[in-house]
Image (cartoon, rainbow, N blue to C red; front, side):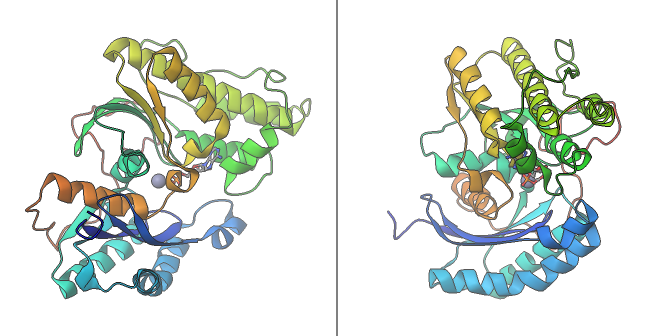
Length: 351
Ligand code: KG4
Ligand code: ZN
């Protein structure tokens, strides 16, 4: 089986990680490189789109070459080229997509234009061969906070989204307020370990609400007020914030489960899925509903190219005669996973 499994080259460049990976349809990551732009963006306290696009453009070609070399393969051995085509920072997405198109054209192999969110949504299946459809997915990243029913490759039903900030964004803003720098999520998680989650009284926006969605803007403002009051230790604010965020997530998932019934598995994906407190809260919630809990390994949670290559593998598996996406396909700054989902109110909604 190992010899015949299809091989897909994946390219990711939608935010601040430049990443390339070679993945097989039987779940082996043959080679993988990832270059973080943390150092370039840190002075600005967040990702600067123009700097990101330039950094992707400089790094991507040598990284592709290096990954092919690491695996000892040439494009002849590859069955498809998968590249993120959105959503994300458009300059960066264009760099990766154009590179993917060029490789597809030069090699005659099909291009698979991958939705970055689909990469996150299917990534748990790369790590866990037992995870079948359907599953309930909490997708929590820097740009998104959604609950999806994943019914199959290409079939995603959005049950909830955020009406303002994404969860990762709330972690990042909290980090900024607390002076923890960028990227914020891991720093907040570390500091929270030293704090008391009950020390600071913070709101749980939309908890118990009739609508299914998330909101984190009010929580972020409350964190700012708590910090500016000068009455609290930073670690207590971090711990209280993290607990408030977790309470919001579990409340909204409970609501989704009440309304849509239990699914065989609860799955978490996206950068915030790297958070251990979030993971253990979800694990308990899944157990209380008799659901399996699946969380991909940490390096598959944050942005990476293995998940993009894997989404390509899934597409080839689903459509064995897939001839490739058109080479004039456009990069998309916004690209909802569920095109039927209604737009929600609120500013700053990403998809
Ligand atoms: O999926 P991802 O790498 O990029 C996007 O597609 O957005 O997610 C990045 C987000 C950032 O907001 C980052 O702060 C957050 O994931 N994050 C975390 C942790 N690690 C990354 N948030 C909380 N705890 C963590 N350990
Ligand atoms: Zn992501």
